[in-house]
Image (tube, rainbow, N blue to C red; front, side, top):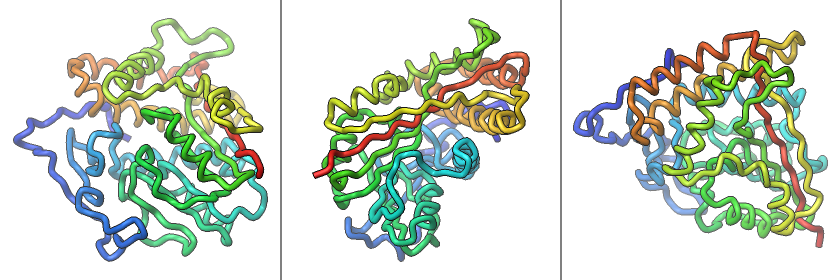
Length: 328
């Protein structure tokens, strides 16, 4: 975890958006063509590493610190679901699964191990997935908002913490609908950025809530993202033509305040994930939006102090939404 978050951006002449690559060149031949250096490379800025392909499209880094955050988040969601990886009723024998915005690929690899007879494809902007993966798992570097170039007739399409950082959910979800097998499923897992409590212990000036409010405007203006897309997602899926749309919302504790042991453990995990997320957003998006370095540091420090206060019983909703393509 970063300590107190903000990294001073270097002048352009010092960091020069240095491009590096640690992608295995022997593994770049795919059915989608050879991967160029712009696809396999990385860019170092603000003390963090970012994707070079579609440079600037995604605001979070892809370095070791981000891997730790995503790995802990993956473990947190598995614990939340008592070991499950999904909620959609996909059956016991899916043949083709695609994970869109796969990140470091943990979900895709575990699905490959769970369904050994299935072909599992993970797609991401960054070439950051392991080289040694189950034989039925493959990873592709691509922007999922580009024209669809992947396979079709998928049994299951999966998104996790992706839809709130898409510019056009309609195009992406329409592509999924067209390329699912009749009767196939899509599942979306994401955070709705609203902090609440059941006992009114969250004050009006709660710094994590202020952070989310600030971030919504920054990501909308700088990247075109809608962090509140989950609000209307079920209706949206129905309008596109999906059926059997379901939603389940979990209240994830922010901090180790719950008395229940399981919830306290989840809250501790989420506290760390959230603080690392705040630090990553402070390192680049808030700086590029023009916020003063001192103001950013004060916000990050305020957030860090607030989530450690066990008298504040804050939680954040995590939405699981799944829907089906109509059978033939």
